[in-house]
Length: 75
Image (cartoon, rainbow, N blue to C red):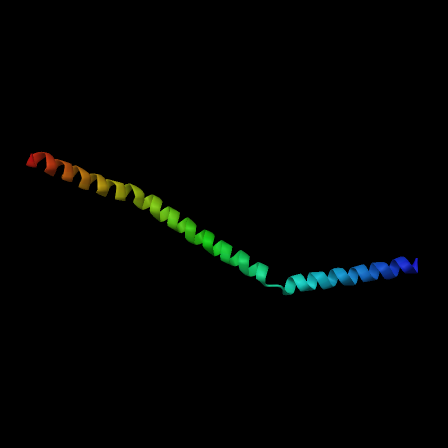
């Protein structure tokens, strides 16, 4: 019984040490933070492009129609 208790204590100590090292390791936390920041920036860019997309299309359509009208009138 004492042998099992000693092994259990060693296992508990190892688990505590592993958890302590994982808590001290900040590289995983940094990666997650940068990933969330990148997601925010990309989401904002997509929203901006989506909202401006129809306006840009209208501007280019107007330019194209004016150019087409100008070219047909000059012939």
